[in-house]
Image 1 (cartoon, rainbow, N blue to C red):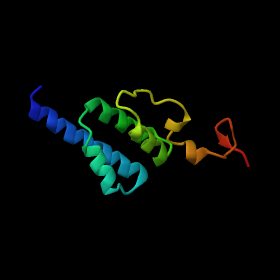
Image 2 (cartoon, one colour; image 1 turned 90 degrees about the horizontal axis):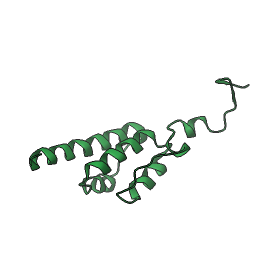
Image 3 (spheres, rainbow, N blue to C red; image 1 turned 120 degrees about the vertical axis):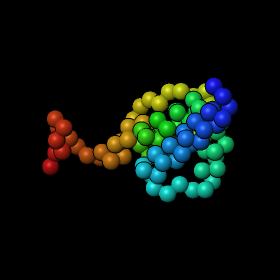
Length: 98
């Protein structure tokens, strides 16, 4: 792959990550955008896009952002986007108890 193609794909992935963060969590700080633009590895960006789409809250995503580059598992309730929304509700057969 040519360098300019790779650079374009990195920019697209960074912008995709920022867009997902805005959709899920609202405004994105300039510092976070700068940190995202420091990432030059497509695999890391893809992992972070998945983390942003599935993280239960911004703190879970931010923790994933701080992990080492070779991290690749997104497991458990921290990556259930409805975890905080459903927390504390009692359900039975998919219906909320009264």
